[in-house]
Image 1 (spheres, rainbow, N blue to C red):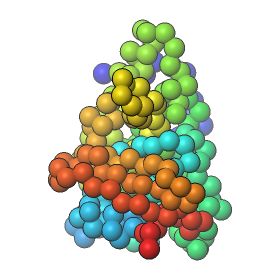
Image 2: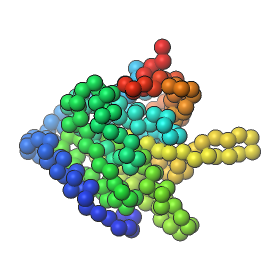
Image 3: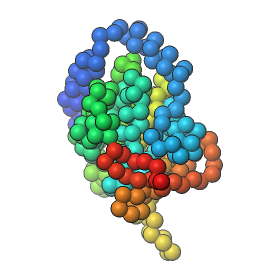
Image 4: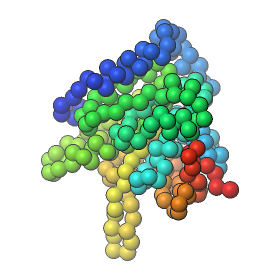
Length: 266
């Protein structure tokens, strides 16, 4: 199936390639060999919250898609960033597609208490849903550069901005579905972890008003792990495991949101 039909630019790809080229001068063969050794050693990425990691048998899995959804300002970006910092400590890189302009080097340095780890975080900001598609389609050529985590934050920001009439919406849904399929293919082929954050919309029924992930069930169809993040109180968030193919039990934990990130509630 072809990519979403829209105007595409190469500026993001040029920035990305320059960033990757600056990260080291090792040959592709050496880089790939190192990545293969690391795949044998690590099979989970810690989320930086011990009780949550315990619920997930060590953290989020490699080779699969993790879907984090919730309302604005609940901590989705913070949770994803913590995963990126935890693998950066192991000298592995994250390819971060930031559609919300929500991640900033100063904030990352504050969470990490160091600027050294920033070199392992490659941030790119597409300007349209078509450009997001283009980046995902070209991503395989970047995997040899020791990228072990791909984050799309959020996958539905640019998608929702283009929703309009029925025929166009069908095409957008088809393209979002294709993007998720491609990400899962990359995750499985190269044993890398993929985190997809997502916005929410109201789901009003006769008895209650709930939230549901944007894009309906498209992202959840491809994910193996779904985490819902909710606002409880000032500085307090609830993380619920709503889907886990390795454990059917629904589990919930309350955490604190601080300048240093999300942490276990004492």
